[in-house]
Image (cartoon, rainbow, N blue to C red; front, side, top):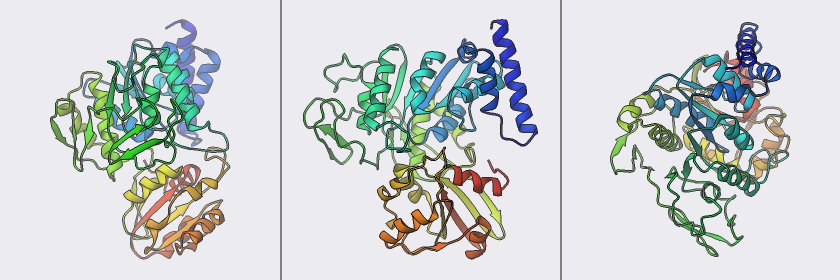
Length: 415
């Protein structure tokens, strides 16, 4: 690297280490921020010479990135932003901290994907899904799909691993010059991980016609856009690869959605030449992802933490949560988005019949939504009060971003 980049990288590592030592955070943002102030091209310099995978989407980025990094590690050392800092500052800090590695797997905020592709020249980009998120500041879903499509069109040599079940992702992954979108471009690999949330993809992004669905299939009623045949698919306990070989996937992470994330990770690793046979055992080593899915015993209660930040992810969280007392926590701080109207897009009916507690800055907004859904609840002001309010045994905690971090801090920042 140029001397300026070497100095910036060294300062980045030092700043991150000081932040951790001072208890001010994990250093995954401040280190990159300072490094980029010294050398605005630092991310590009740190990326040079590495084979890089980028993972982006509205939901599942952090978990899929962690699984993909584990799978790619079958080949050698992998740099990754394991704490979920998914903007260029976080990428810069992660690469600087890792030092020289042949591979990197980076989670990328969907708004920054185009910028990070330009800086890192990735070998492969994984596109997970697109749905509404942070309504007060995020772009509309169709606009985000357009930005992705334009960015990928500028880099036709980049390999793409994309979700065949999401019409917005399929359209974004298909080059504009491809008139018949039933034909899969040679640089795109499709996976099927399921898409339970459909409310952001009823209208075709290509022509504006209605999208119809039947079982796993979907198609536009006005143009050739339709679900492509996936090469990687999921069943209840395993993954089928493009050759038809089946691999049993044993995860320590809950829910069918994480089997889908594992399939995506295997597809990403395969683009680097990793055989599923070698990658699958490494997925079982992933027990928690930046605190997500962590289980902690507190006063005779086994507390499990689940992060849910938008309607699609709340739907999946309900599937992962056991039939047990459940604490819901909602904030509306800047990282969460200030608008909580999305709560009315979530069906809380699956929580009926269990003990439900609510807390957080916007607990009263949540209270109104639960009342509309006929879900009885108890308001508690603190996490400790919630623990005392439930009997010994399991306590499921589902929280949006800053509420999750608040509870995680009370549990000593579990990982």
